[in-house]
Every structure is written in C-alpha cells, then in structure tokens.
Image 1 (cartoon, rainbow, N blue to C red):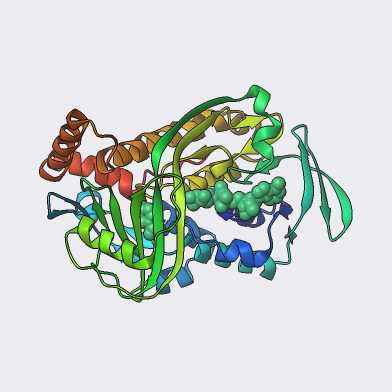
Image 2: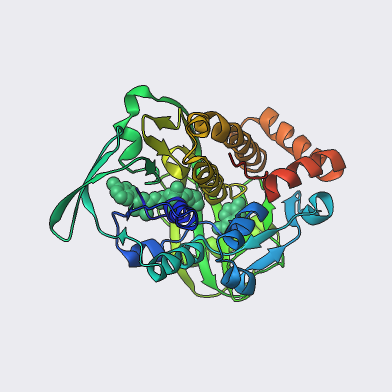
Length: 367
Ligand code: APR
Ligand code: PHB
C-alpha cells in the first residue's frame, strides 16, 4: 500500500527476489513525482539504490557532501563527516528517487496502480480497492503498509498500537529558489530569532528553511530572504522563488509495527522532525529489513523489534538536533543549555564524531 519511496523501494526489492507484488497509490503519478520533500541520502540509502540497480542518475546528478556546518554566535563550525566516519551523504531530491523507482517499476511491467480509491485493509491479508471505476479484491500473503502518515493501514490496527508522540511548537517555512547555493555545504544555524537551514538541490537550485510558527502562512519572498540574511549573518544569494510551504514538526512512533499479515514501514509507522533529514532514510531502512525478512516467519515475527531499535536511535538523534538548534522557548536557562551543547559539539571531537555517525546514518539491518 502506497507508492512513496517506501512502497516503491519495497516493490523493487521484492521484484529482485522474484516475489510478486501489487503497488496501490491513492494519488496520480504527477503528484507523487512532483511532491517536494527532503533531499539528503545517507550512505546506506545510496548503497541500496546501487544494490537495486538504480544508482546511475543519483551518482551523475547527486552532490556528495563530506561535511556540514553548524553556525551560532555569528560563526560557522564545520563537522567533517567523512574525516570522522569514512562515510558521506548525497544531495538528491526525494522526488528524484521516486522518479527512478517508478520508471524501473514501469519498465518491468509489474502492477503499480495510481489513483486507487475506497481502499480498505483486513490485516488477515485482504485488500479491497477501486481502480478505473472497478472494484477489486486482493488476497495477499503479506500487506506492507507504506501509505504514509495519513494512510489507512495504521488506523486499521489502531486498537493494538501504542503511540509515542511529541509535537513541537514551531514549523519550517521552506523555499526552493533559482539561484546558486550560498555555501558549498549545508548550514544549520541557531539564532535567537530561530533556526535556519541552507540546503540545495543542485548547483543552480537553493533550498532554504526558516523556523516559523506552526500555523504560519508563507511570507512574502522579500521577508523570507531578509530573515535568512539575519539568521545566517550573511547576505545569501537570492533568486526567483518557485516553491514555498510550511511543514509542521512532529516526532511519532507506533509500536508494534505489525499485526497479523500487515507490516507498517516508513511514515506510516513513524515520523521525525526534519532536522537531520532522517525521514526518507528511515523509510528505506524499514523496507530493506522487511524485504529481507519475507519468506522467513521467525524474521517476520522479529520485524518490529529489529526495526524499532534503529527507529528509536533515529528518533533520539532528530529530537536532539531539533532541540539543540531551534529557539525552543523564552526560557534563558534552556538557551544557555543549548549554547553549551553547541559549543561542546563543535569543540569535542568525541561529540562531533557522535553527531557525524548519526548524520551519515547507521547501517541498515537485514534479516
Ligand atoms: N491508499 C493508497 N495509497 C495511499 C493511501 C491509501 N489509502 N493513503 C496514502 N497513500 C499514499 C500517499 O499518496 C503517498 O504517495 O502512500 C504514499 C506514502 O508515501 P510517503 O508519505 O512519501 O511515505 P513513505 O514512502 O513512508 O516515505 C517517507 O516521506 O514524508 C516523507 O520525510 C518523509 O522522506 C520521508 C518519506
Ligand atoms: C533538504 O535539503 O530538504 C533538507 C536538508 C537537511 C535537512 C532537512 C531537509 O536536515
């Protein structure tokens, strides 16, 4: 269920193992391919794209980064990711990953149905849906709930789930603009007016974010650029803004991630705040584990426990990065604690190394 990165990658992994699958997606193809999301691939996500034979465009167009910058008190401090860990990250938009996966699915002629409706799931193994005006019933050995945070799979088994959740009292206002990035590497900036992030999609496209009220309406372009200048303490490159939106921030995990023949993966099971860019990568980690567990009942029974071990590490990292970098409250004690943590992170090699290992990503677990 779901044709986002989790569902599409799982379909590809199953194809390579010779296991039949049907992918059902509620939206149309254009929507799924154009949806703007994060753009940082961990080393293990890149390795997975290579493993499934879809790394070519990612290597050609992706930008490999060997460090990131933390900026506060008007000064930048580089965390040398590759020097500290031997690994790197790649900037390659989630929608590019999705395009590559859809193209491969279509080339292999396996079922991927867009614009399905009236979807209902029986965790014993039955899926009902409507496509092209006709209703269908599928009997499956296993249903993968890869239908995102707002999908139907998780609510279907709500009775057996425990929810762990935190909402943050702020959101991110994101823009995509036609101009060269203002720095070669990503900048995570802590400022008394709030957090800011400088990222990119290519040498010509800038991606930037500002901490804002969770229910804010996107500001005028000029106001966004002025605020970015203030928070980064420099004049950032400006250009025509062609995408603008506000994302709420949330930490969310359900346990277990399975019930009967239904297995949740990706955003259907957990959400992280975007500081650290773990959402897509964690979805990929889930499906790598799930795909390798299919066909082995003991491994499937252990899915939740094994997936959640990694998921909670990532939850901690994303919460920690969020708490260290944002304006969390007006409480001066909290601000001093944050500044102390930032100074420690950029001056202690041990602490910088801990950040770097989480940032480039923990290894994926397979059965
Ligand atoms: N039936 C079929 N498909 C559905 C249904 C439904 N009832 N409900 C939702 N979907 C589809 C959505 O339209 C979406 O395309 O499921 C897909 C889920 O994809 P994502 O939300 O991208 O979730 P996932 O594949 O787990 O990927 C996680 O997405 O939110 C980002 O930052 C997150 O990068 C991470 C990634
Ligand atoms: C992005 O480029 O969209 C991005 C980068 C880093 C993050 C989050 C988002 O932590």
